[in-house]
Amino acid sequence: QVQLVESGGGLVQAGGSLTLSCAASGRTVSTLAMGWFRQAPGKVQETVAVISQASSNTYYTDSVKGRFTTSRDNAKNTLNLQMNSLKPEDTGVYYCAARISDYGRWEFWGQGTQVAVST
Image (cartoon, rainbow, N blue to C red; front, top):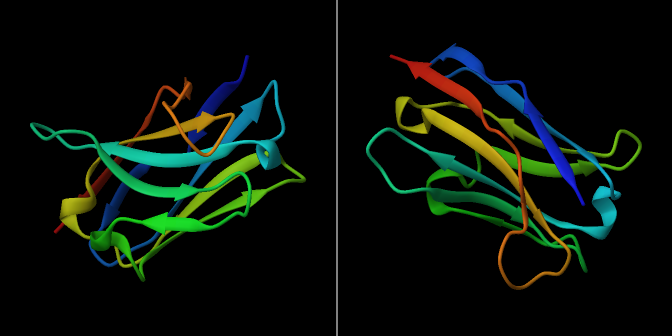
């Protein structure tokens, strides 16, 4: 079983930066495919960024490309999401998820952390 705990959310002005962290326990992050998802009020959940287990390739949704970067910190057993040039439309609850393979459903989820970007 894998437990995930997100941290680092908060309120920031547009143009600012935040770093989210997802601490994993029960398995090392290098053996997991991991991703960030967000849920904005009244909108469906969106995949923000994914890092593959096998090759550490990354995927970003178009709206965050060039602004967000996800990476593993194997020493801390965390997944991080560096978010720069934040926009009000980045507001939402950000969730970390993991799965054992690069395919299939996301098996493990964190509880989420709130990000609010003001104008």
